[in-house]
Length: 214
Image 1 (cartoon, rainbow, N blue to C red):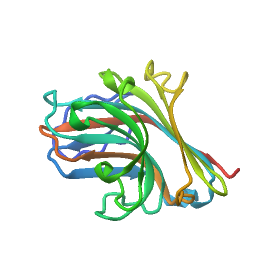
Image 2: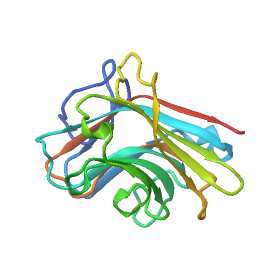
Image 3: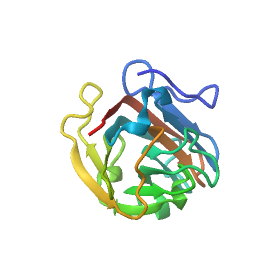
């Protein structure tokens, strides 16, 4: 369940597992954050990998007015993915743009986890994000070849704290052949409050990083 990221002295205590969950707490618009596994793990060499986590969002006073998004990211070229006009990655995005809850694969060529500026590679609007009061098991996988990179999103709508990833089902996939991203220094989870009010909280727990060379 640990660690927890706090940006306020007294946010709600709603750990998904055990006594604490990683928490992104956004009090105002135009704020974002990301968390990654240490670069000492040698991410640059892996051609196949996965990041997965048990995810839940809490809106202080639903429905929220404005736009926010969160999810997982892979194949990033820098560790700080919140820098304006910098940082590239592939992302799985859960957002509420235009009042619709969407789940999509995005490619961010130069703006990090600013999901509003990312290109949509594949999207669904009738998925598990539509009914999301409970934790969702979420997985983002990548497969790098000589000419393309394939991104796969899986989810488990029956996830529980004791068993978050059994029964993962593929929801989206996309193969990028246009200047595909093929190397990485970081992968992890992210959140971005673009224009939303009031505050929101995104929880991540039971997170795993998995990768191999071939």
